[in-house]
Length: 210
Picture (cartoon, rainbow, N blue to C red):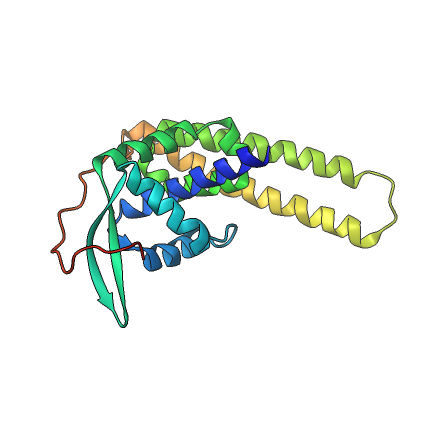
């Protein structure tokens, strides 16, 4: 069970890295900063997990060192996504756009960060599954809240949690309306695989990961 959990986290991290490198080439320090900005509200990414993930992706041919830049006293390798990486990104993103992803808040949030690459129909399906899961969660919270307890604070906490979930549902429903309109108008097709970034000028020969 622990091994599967670690594997799942590693896959999510690789998905996030590939998604960010689709936007532009980045070195490890910038990637960590962007990952923290994008995912930091629910997931902390350390260098201890980032650099092994970069090594795995580079070994599989999903990313490559484009060039290196010297910053102060360090030389940083700048990574870019490859065509193989584009394919892996879409595979990971599409395979996870299912009921399991909708019921897991971390998985759902990461998919939301890269929603633009999914087809509108897939986005709508994921949103519908997420709403269904949240509605079930409200039912569980209400059942727990209706239990016999005189604890004022515990009851207040349950009310607060219910309101939070209801707020999420309202947000999801607004997104669903937008996706339905997009489908009706035939707009907003997922970007899918894009051309990899043009070769950057080689500033310095790539060195060890940084």
